[in-house]
Image (cartoon, rainbow, N blue to C red; front, side, top):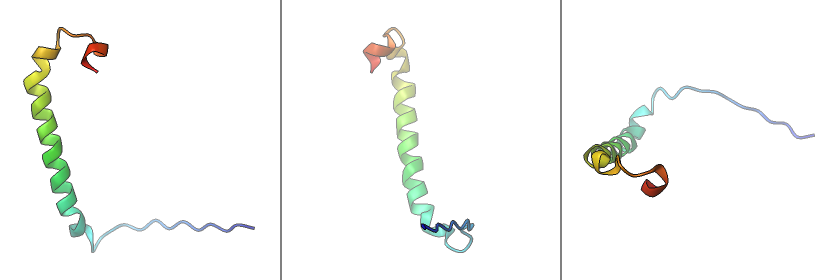
Length: 52
């Protein structure tokens, strides 16, 4: 018989370890949003298939 145990535990004391990752994610997302905003009007006349 296979026994499985699952624990759910909130990260309370080590949340600062993820700050650097979160910062990189936010910078990447900001870059992508900026590119999309700048190029949106140029892509507006194209079909979805042409954009992809």
